Image 1 (tube, rainbow, N blue to C red):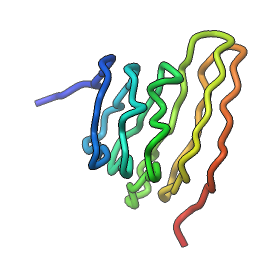
Image 2: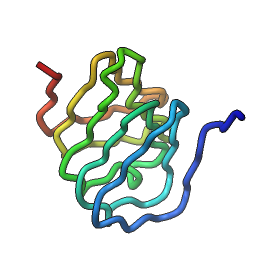
Image 3: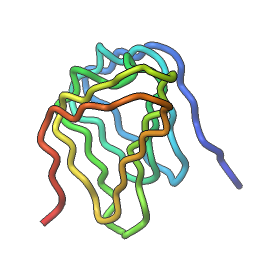
Image 4: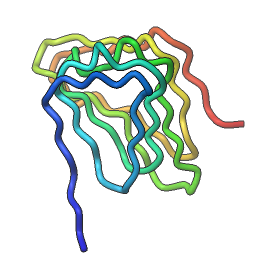
Length: 116
């Protein structure tokens, strides 16, 4: 059975954070300002398509895959639209950042760390 990527363009209110599993990419475009707690990406990648989809209340964004499989934290905002991440970012064994937005900058304002 093949399950493809998932897109969510609705607002989410998650007080316990968000955990994503499975090898495909999760694309978020809705307002996630009400998300609190950690954002755990245990497998696969995550793409934000709207500055409001970047969870400003998250306690951390964690790319947790330790198998060596590549994980991507990606941004695909409208052209010329800036974005920012306030939460600390913890990278896994093979993590990448990708800004696919045309003429846009992403500000990383929290600590960025890797596994020991």
